[in-house]
Image (cartoon, rainbow, N blue to C red; front, side):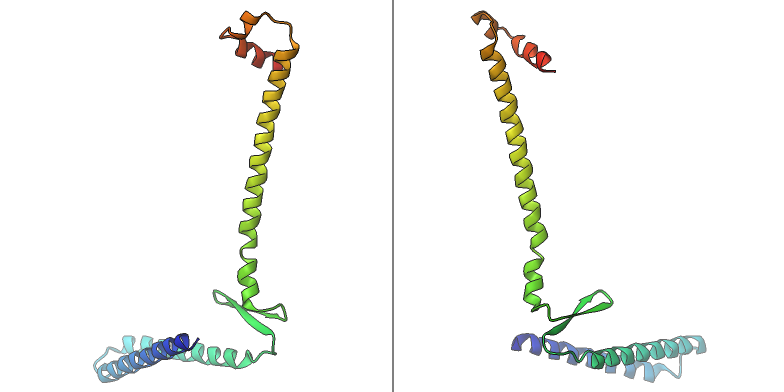
Length: 150
């Protein structure tokens, strides 16, 4: 847990340094930039400040009660309170995979049952019929059986 916090602090520090570097470069060259480019940069800066202000206010609004947590999906946030820990969601994510495996096993079992049933019907037809022994060795006999079942 501490390692993640250190990595997060380090990345925030790098981001802040990069931001200062970009600001210094823009401030140095702002006098020589054409008017249209400086206006586009001003507009982009205002938008970035507005987004940062919204992000800060959203973080301040997320002071949640104990046992509650926020689920982030892309740009959307959803609050889920009292359902348990995020570990529960990780375990629940395996449920569809488990159901898929169970479904595949049931399908395989059903197909195996159908094959056994078809073989039993053929055996029953062979054993209950009155055919000479030479008919069993005839190559067209299996074709006869499949035609008879249809």
